[in-house]
Length: 444
Image 1 (cartoon, helix red, strand yellow):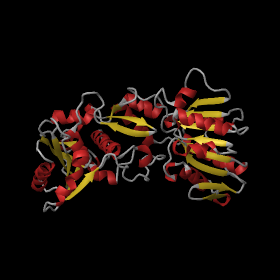
Image 2 (cartoon, rainbow, N blue to C red; image 1 turned 90 degrees about the horizontal axis):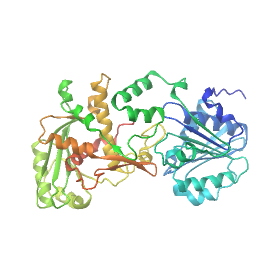
Image 3 (cartoon, rainbow, N blue to C red; image 1 turned 45 degrees about the vertical axis):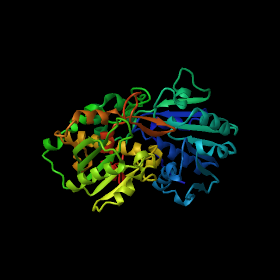
């Protein structure tokens, strides 16, 4: 059998016999997941292995690395030796690939026997509890090994503590990979990295060099200085929208809280303001008048809490636009679609709220790229009309939200500090772009 996998020298460690644990960590662009997939395909072909491919959370088979392995098999013209099924892969050598998430399959993982190789992908998201379950399960089989691939995140992450502290486990190899050693690192990736360093050097070092996340466990979803560059950016570019108008509507939670609405014309936020109405039906009527005046085609409204009954109030109106509830705690849109090359929307985002805020962040990033001279579609950007009343307050509200990771998924906290009010105008802006999350902007 003549098969040439052409491994890069930085992955020679995969073939060393001495290790029981191999920890490969890096930033983006090293090709580590592709290399491990190739290694496992070759190992399955040349020996008899029971290979567990796992991660902290796997809600569906699309969350797994099965597509990476299938691509490797196809790329090396080995389909005649493998049977790639919906949720497993078999090889004529007798090897078998198993795909399971640890957190939701604890008992199943505990009862597994005969594992010879385990690949723990996205290992930075693995909890201490899950790692304590996985290790004895795999190592009760003589000669078994675990390969960890991860992008370091926080110093208290279980895998980081295990391999990046002062003392590492015996019979382990820890290797930091470098994008500079990747012969397939192309000009497009270099441009992406250069841009990241111009915009946010600390975050760029995390993304590309594998440094820990800046500013601890949370950081701004959209930095304030980014947002300021979006103000009247469309005027500087002499760009006018040709798209429809959408409204986001956030209802007051009570007390001194106010309701807020925002209107966007294509990718330009044209109107944002707060208002007070004593009852939910009156707030709906107020928003209805504004929607008619500005010829809005769709209203996305907060349907959690006090807004839960607003759908009935909208239905009683004689309207031509669509009124659609926005439930932040719902599952992300397109949860089985890829957000990154290795993660789906459902795996990356905790809920629709996190996805919606991150969608706006990606639009802001696109605006900065466009201003920097890149060829970006303005319809995928965010522009803000500088004549909006209380503009500074709105910008501060948009910059108020922070994000963190929990159980491997991105979460957004709109009021991260005690005493901070929920950002109603910012919520309205985010919801005005809710329709865009149905198609989404894929992570770059």
